[in-house]
Length: 356
Image (cartoon, rainbow, N blue to C red; front, side, top):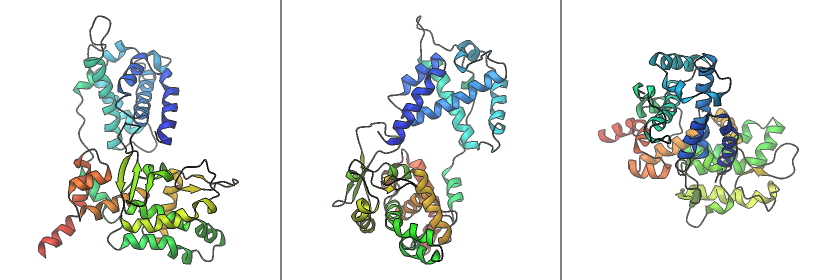
């Protein structure tokens, strides 16, 4: 189990007692199929919904666990419409259409379980009337739209190697007058280049990179073993290939990992960082990796480039040389529908190729 999943499982166990008994039962039903991280997102969605029911006086409360099945059965379409409006306004920064769709989907899933799967002692459904069955949730996350948002924000062709080279050497010239920034770069340049190179040459997610241990790296066969998103088997790590060009950067970093980051023998994490005030290196966090890429991207002239867009950059480049199914497997997508983004991103290149 990844570090984040362990944290999410603890958090999930803390939140469950605050939920009504039927939601706790639903979580037990879904636990074999979904990761603790996904279930925690469900719980957060239900907290918002139950809190709204109490605030609106639909449930007498005062606690979320006091919301009854009868109160859910009594909900009308006007209540769900009011809740959808609430989701667009309850935050200063409005929820996107995608976020609202996901929150409604988690509710539909719960109501479906209560009305179609769960039974009481008399073998009748726990929920006799399911208002969420009337709600149509339109698909708002289309590959073509996603591709349009990414165009111009990714690394293309020669830029992939150029960005890694900039991390290794170019950045130092740009911050030569800043002693603190220059010292930090001298300390971390090899590590940062190895992280960027690994993602740009394998398409790994940042969460997968964060959770890597030294033992997960097979230098001889150019393989990385990772817990893939959506795979709930916590005993199996998926082998993912990386390109030859990432191997050199990994080797350079691994040669200095122990000495430069004062890594204790108990620390198995591949990528380390030394926090202020500490003497030994610890596993680098997701946020630290994200901030690291943003720092280099801004100086490189690609301010919109994020660590996740490094993955998109690899995928676009990889798709040009392979089919959609190989790209899907390399990226660990559950469906080719997600991989279709890269077909739209390469439309221009495809057009030029057919003209030639």
